[in-house]
Length: 254
Image (tube, rainbow, N blue to C red; front, side):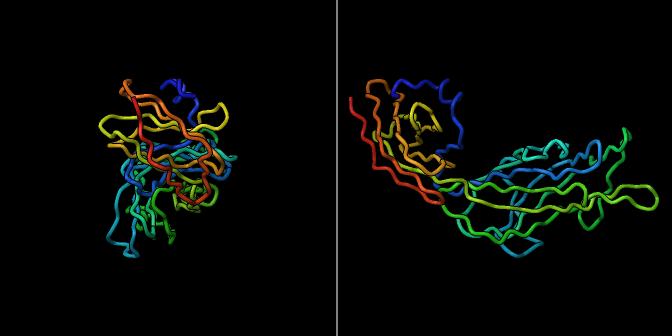
């Protein structure tokens, strides 16, 4: 367990890990319901959140947004893709806004048509959430884009994009956090079940956190970058859903 390599970690890790400062972390995913088109492409330019009910002000862009066109018809039958992520402030998220660019289109029987967007939605589609988020947890926000109801054909043969999106925000499992001394160098931390490395991270000034773990019992392996110190392990670390487990401080020895 203590001989784990960086390669093994990247090959086996299944969950999000972090050395951030205990804030909630949000990942935004896009999925779709089936529709009778060849392609439906939406041009994602930004994703913003709002901690207030002020729909005109208070919007903040996610720190990481995967800006590109998405063929949402490839995201059906349980498939999804992450379009952005960010650290959050603890408290309550009131709204999210999906901002689309001009390059939206639908393909019908091999023919491509521009999807025109009503002027009222050009500033972005606002979706109400009104949900609390807690420090140290990983949250998944699933935006379920209903393509069949979102595309309207006008009498003149044009296609209008009037997005119908359902939003679902859920905490993903639980988290654990702790501290490693000395804190003058980085230490790799791995969460393990049986022989499987589930997730891992590296300390930052001694602290670490691993988020998005399924509930269960884990072992932790600590591999210091300063090889004059010995690797260590801790067993019997219990993680519960929607909760943060604080691990006793680990003191590395020579």
